Amino acid sequence: MSLLDPPNHFTLDGLAHAVRESGPRAGEPMVLLHGFADTGASFASLTAAIDAEAPGRYRFIAPDWRGHGDTGHAGRCYWFPEYLADLEALLDALPGLAAPITLVGHSMGGQVASFYAGLRPERVAHLVTLDSLNVPDADSSRAPRRYRRWLDAHRAPPSHAVHPDLATVSERIGRRYPELDGDTRHMLAAQWTRPVDGGRQWRFDPWHRAPFPQPFRIDDAMAIWREVRAAVLCIDAEDSPARALVAEADMARRRACFTDLTHRVMPGCGHMLHLEAPERVAALIRDFFGETRRA
Image (cartoon, rainbow, N blue to C red; front, side, top):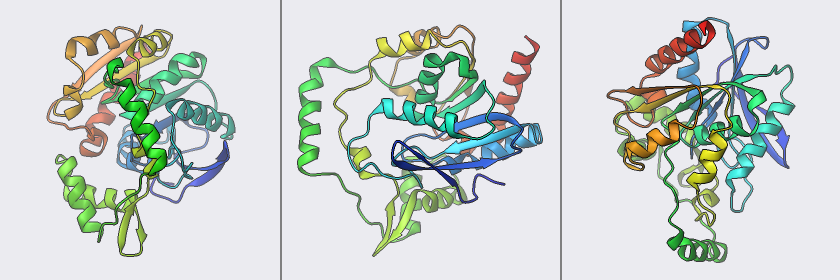
């Protein structure tokens, strides 16, 4: 089995959720949570590298979030707490899933994973965040503008443009993520889009582009992070644009919320570090598991 194989589907909260698995059913469960506009299939290289480090040890589980990839679209505004509810429903629905588990999350997926580990600490033994925990705190003075834009979106729902072909999509991905090689960009172009009349269109629900009226609050996040009891590996990418979103001193305060955290920075890597350097990420995860199991 591979994360590139067709997914299984579970109906959760009225939506058909796509879930890809690889590895033995009796393996240690590792749930991998993708970022915005991505899919669970993008973890295929990372899981192959982890499996090469520890053959047959892990059961890899990679869902597509609601409104992403092969999971159904809600067709309306999405709310961050829904991802938490979907994750819990999925963990309850998966057969043979033993607790506690390992959560690995990239970008938005890491944000969800970190919250879940604080809200359900008994279910999570290890937490790995990949270039995450870096959402800026909201500016309350901009609340009226956010709410007006949200109302405007309901008058004129968002939509996706049609791109003529995969090469055009691949070029667009390359402009956003210049760290990725051509083969990886082409793979993502195929994963992230679907064929339509006239070309290709993004798979994720265009409602994900709608303004979000209730923004991220750092005080809430830090209170939740202080509840995490899992061992945490926080991997940041040195060349990621996300590093400019939050000052390093503030990032250090965020990391200090976790009682057992290991922080690593990957030199020469951009935001999509799990695709750019899967073997290096896998080696950091291997070392992290070795340290936590010796403790």
